[in-house]
Amino acid sequence: MDDLNAKRAPPCRLGLIGRGIQASKSPLLHETEAAAQGLHCVYELFDLNAHDDRGDVLAELLQDVEQRGFAGVNVTYPCKQTIIPMLDELGEEARIIGAVNTVRFRNRRRIGHNTDAWGFAESFRRGLPAASLTRVVQLGAGGAGAATAHALLELGAQTLLISDVDATRAETLARKLASHFSDRVIIPADDLALVVSNANGVVNTTPVGMTAHPGSAVPKHLLRPDLWIADIVYVPLETQLLRDAQAAGCRTLDGGGMAVFQAARAFEIFTGRKADGERMRRHFAALTKA
Image (cartoon, rainbow, N blue to C red):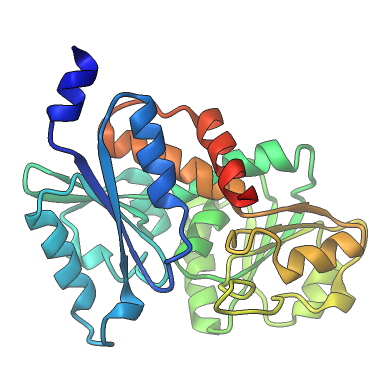
C-alpha cells in the first residue's frame, strides 16, 4: 500500500541551476536515492548556457521553480554567492561561509544552505586520512572555495593560504574566515610557486580541469611526492591536475566524494529523510564507470 501511495503522490520536484551542467550526476543521485526510499523524485537541470547573459536570469529561474512547486534546488558555479540576496533566510553554515549550494522552499520562504563544506570534509576524512593540515594552499576563493576553506579549517588546518586570480576576492575570503578562526593563520597568497614549495597539501576549487575548462591549476613542476592534492572537480573525475599529481607520487583526492556527500546532505534538507551516503557513493561509482 505504501508503494502504491508513493506512486500516486505528486513527485518531489528538485533541480540544479548552474553553467555547463549537462554532465551533472545530481539528477540520477537524487532520483535513485529517493526511489530506494519509496519516493518519486523528478530532478531537472537548468543550464545557464541555454539562456542569454541577462543579469536577471537566475532570479527568473528561481521564481519559476518556486511557483511550479519545487521542494528546492541546488545551485552551482557561478551562482553560489550571487543567489544570496534573492533568499529570505540562511542556515548557519551558509551565513558563515557566505555561499549557498542548496535552496529549500518552505512556507513561501527561500532558505539557503551550504552542504558543500560538510561534503568536502567527509570526503577528505575518508579519502586522505592522516594527511597533514599544518600548511595548506587553496586555489580559488569563489563560492566553492569559501566552503572548502571553511571545511579545511574545521578539519584542523593551521595555516591556510588562499590564491585566486582576483586578489581582492582572496583577501575578502581570508579576512572573513579569520573572523571565525582567530587562532589560525589565514592569508591571501600571490606567489603560487613559493607557497606550494612550503605546503603539505593543495586544494583546487577553481573550474580549471573541468571538461569546459581543460588544463591544470598547478604547474607540473611544482608537484612533489610529499604533497597531497585534492581537486573538487568531478567532470572529469580524473583531472589533469590529479594525473600530474599521481605521476609525481602525490596522494590524491578527486571530487567524487564531495559531490556525493554534499548531495546526501542536500537530499535530507529537501525531503526530511536520512540519506544513505554509502548507497549513494556506490551508485556514483557505477555511474562514473558506465
